[in-house]
Length: 147
Image (cartoon, rainbow, N blue to C red; front, top):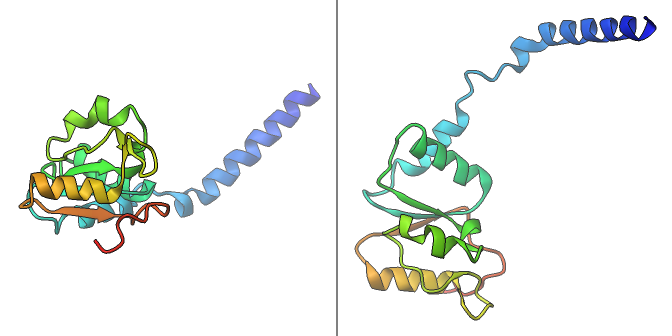
């Protein structure tokens, strides 16, 4: 019975705490990530190609594209996903605007490709459709120097 009393007190205190602080912690109307995603995609030209890096950037843009159907014309690929050897063989066809110069993004592995290699292959295949980068270069890939 002591355990039940302690449990009752604990639940009562928790309920009181939640009810007192709910309005201050309510994020129901927070659409900051939606605005961020929209403003990242909005200025891009039609059918642009976008390489993204980082969870905030990737997921904000993916949310507005997939859930809100905003700027579905922009082909967006996640730089981190490109590092997996299975990604290009399994998912590469879902990105018809991109050309893959190797099996995965890793500039120092024999079958891998560098960012420079990816950009060169894509500009050679389609120089009219611009490629944008959001989130910066991979810190260990120096092949983009001079691009």
